[in-house]
Each structure stands twice: as C-alpha cells, then as structure tokens.
Image (cartoon, rainbow over all chains, first blue to last red; front, side):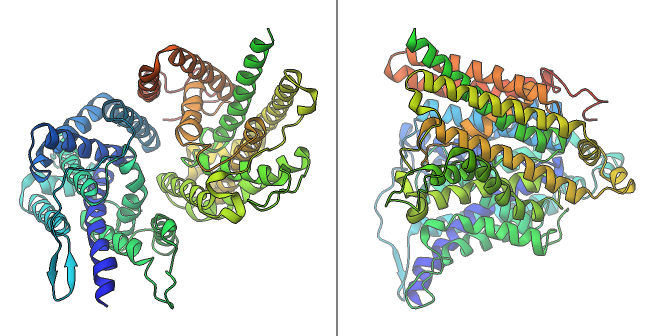
Length: 294
Length: 310
C-alpha cells in the first residue's frame, strides 16, 4: 500500500497537476476562440527554458524564475495572436489549427537555436525527501502540487469574481450573445492568452523540475493535455483540471503491478494511456465528463 | 557526371514520393476537410509492412519474407488503410479538430510499437538491407530506373486522384466538406464518405512509406520524423493549393526544391553553423506556412470549382 502511494499515487498527482495547468489553458482557448491550439506544448517548453536561463543567469531559485518564464510565454502568445491568429479569426477553425502548428514549429526552432537539442536539468539541490509514516515525498513534488492548487484557486477567483472572468465565460457559452450584450471580444481574447500562457509557463517549469528539459518536452505532453481537456469537457476549465489529474493518475498507475508482480502496462507504453483515454472519451462520452461543447 | 546523375535521381525520387504523400493528404484535407496530423503513423505502417515483406529473413525481426515489391507495396497501402479504419470510424463522426488530435496519438502509438516490439520491428535497430527494385542494374542506372518506377506510380496515383476528384464521389466529398447539412439533405452519408476519403488518403501515405523504405533500404523508429514527414507534407499541400491535385503535386515539387536547396546550402557552412542553419530553416518553414495562410490561402494553384472555403 505504501509502495502504491510513494511510487504511483504521488507521481500521478504531480504529473496530473502539470497536465491540469496545461489543459486548462487549452480548454479556455478552445472555449473563447474555438480552435485547438497546437502550439501550447512548445509554449510550455519555451517557458521552461527561459526559467532555466533566468535561474542560472541570475543565480536565483527555480521557483523565483517562474515570473521570467511567464514574461516570455505571455508576449509570445500575444505576438502569435496579433501576427497570425487574429488575422485568421474569420477563417475555418481548421486554418487556425494549422497556423498554430506553424507557430509550434517556429517556437521549437527558436528553442533549438538558443538552447540546443541536448536534454538538461534545472540546477536543484539534493534535498532528502519528507517522510510521514512511511510516505516519502520529494519536497519539490509538494511544491508542485501546492503551486498548481494555488494557480487553480487564483484562476477560480478571476473567472468567478471579476467582470473580465465572467465575460470570458460568457464568450465560451455563446460568443454571439456575449458580443451583442457588449462584451469586449478582443479584450477577452487577450486575457485568455495571458491566463493560458501564464499557466503553461508554470506547467513547463514544473515539468522541467519533475523530469528534465528538452525542446520537445511540451509537444510530448500535448496529446495528454488535449485528452485531459476533452475528458473534462472542452471549454470547461474545471473539467480540464479534473481531467488532467485523472490522466496523470491513470498514466502513473497504468504500470502498477496489480497481478502477481507484472505491471498492468509496460512502462514504455505509458504515453499511450492518453490516447486510450482520448479514444474512450470520444466513443463513450464525446461531450466530456462535464458536458463541454461537442 | 555520374555523381550529378545520382544526385538528380535522389532528389527526383524523393520529390516523387513527397508528391504521393501530398496527394494522399489532399484527398483527406483538400477534398474532404479532414485534418490528419499523424501522417507519420500511416507512412511508418506502410514503410514497415513493405520492409518486413520484402527483406530477406532475419532473426532480429519478424520475417522478412522476400516478397517481390509489386506485391509488398499494395500490401503496405492496405496496411495503412487498415490502421485508418478504426480511428476514422471513431473520430470522423465528431468535430474536425478531434481527428487532428487523435491522429497525433496514432503517430505516437505507431512510434512506440516500432521502438518497443523488437520481435516485430527489430526495435531500435530497425529493418536493414531492404531490397530496392532495379538494384541489379548497378549505379547509377539502378537509381534512375527506380526514379522511373516512382514517377510511374506517381502518374498512376495522380490519375486516380483526378478521377476521384471529378467523380460523383469526389463531388460528394466536397459537398460534405463545404456544407454537411446540405449533403445530408441530398441523401449523402457524410460519415461514410469521410471514412472512405480517409482510408484512401491513408493508403496513398502507406504506399509513399513503402517507396521511401525501398529507396533508403532501411527503416527504424527514428528514420521517419514528424517534421520531415507530417509537417513538410502539410506545407507542401497548403503552398500548392489544397483541393487541387495539380496544386498538391506542384506544391510538393516546389517546397521539396526549396527544402533540398537550403539543405545543400546549410551543408556548405562549417560544423556548428550547419546545425544552427537547420534550426533557422525549421523556423523559416513555419513562417512560410503563416505567410501563405495569410497572403495566399488558396496556394499556388487554388481549387477550381466555386470558392474553396468561406
């Protein structure tokens, strides 16, 4: 039992927290702008690498470098929107999707160019894990889970308590109705990008802390993030967060040796779990658990 | 002279293979509006099928069976279509972007299987010594003869794609793409039409993969990468003009010419700079896609009938 908590449950929650932060942004972007943002993964990698540069360059802790990561991803998202997405807003969603695929490649090329293809790790001191009654947890994992929870709380306050947040939800529910009732569409779109880019920067730093940094790190979790967003009901930020946690847990627990020591799924196939969840959702409940847009 | 001929044959062969892949994507996206971002998966399945069928027996993977290419290539196309069948049946009934996401997953699964199932695919070592048709003619005549074979396949597939586009089936596909409700009202079954187009396009990609392995004489999990298979083909189709088979082929040739020329230019640079130049090229190809989408969304040769999209 303790083994399950230490090696499956806690890593699953950590991974789930990272997926959740990424999936919330995808879901918000889909809700407000109605397209699948394929550059989200590479935006995540950009955040992680800028945090690395800041923490090594300024000799500050990785946690303190998160604002620098966001200071890179937010302008990147806003510039991509202003230069490309905004001009394609009247085209089919498919065209926006292809355009975001192009942006993904451009971001990845920049990361390769400035940081090289070799995987690197954040400088992190070796800290003994915290132990409670046999449950061992790395302190960075505690901070990742708490940090993601804090982000979710702040997002909740923005979406439920502020005028801008309500406008955002209104646009996700019915863009035409929102427009004729005087919602400033462009301001809401900008706010959506800012929120999504901040969250994905945090997710990138957390993913880098949990594993390592490499230029395709974000693209590698893009499928899982989409699966989480669709599982939760696309356009529903809470659903996406919930879907992210479920997916993280499912991925880590998929290798649990439930039957006589043999793992349920070979660890090398872990990343296939996202695909299975995605297909199962599309088959059984395409609107997602929390009834998103179909 | 012989060197130049060999180089030209290589470039021509790859251009022809890319044109086949682009025609396949045109059937899916151009004609029917299906977003397939997992081209790599279908190309890889075709590639491995052809490789395992044609290679000589080896203990490191299943087979090979030493089957002649003219039997193995259609089998490769069929295998890719078979892969497309379940995913298409599930994802095509839903919104277009879900197919895009699901196909990325397909590519990932194919890559995982290719890497991990050593008994089947040879794992990281891949399948080697794959015979290439007309090898026995020696260098460079063997390469030239292979180029002629690829060109012949391209012409045949082009004719098939043209016939498809002009047939009532092709018109129905366009109808489903442009106005699904109207197509339904006219008695068409959009889900089935989409599935057929998806399978047909996947078969083209599988055949392209088969020709690629025959050309390189090798296939491994890292031999095909998303940028040069999936993404480049998208740029080719968008640049050439989606919805138009002439556009697809023209785009494939034009983008391949630019890609190969920049590759050659980058190789002239010293060591480190050459690596960096490859990244700059990646950036520029992404930027080029944006410029085309914004400035000339219909591509070099746009679709001829009506207005392609609203």
